[in-house]
Each structure stands twice: as C-alpha cells, then as structure tokens.
Image (cartoon, rainbow, N blue to C red; front, side):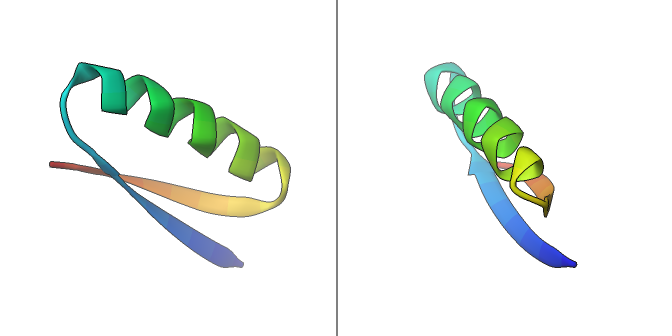
Length: 36
C-alpha cells in the first residue's frame, strides 16, 4: 500500500485535509491524518 501523511492544522486546514484524504482514499491510498 501507498501511504499519504496529511498534517492537520487549524479548522479550515482540517476540512481541506479531510477532502484530500477522501479523494486519495478513493484512488487507493492509505491516508494517515496527523494532528498538528
């Protein structure tokens, strides 16, 4: 599997990170969201 680490900052960044994570998950990545 390919891993994609997403750093999450303040609230607006979290929304963008989750959108990105959802898109990557559909493309077959295992997404790890890392709290900032």
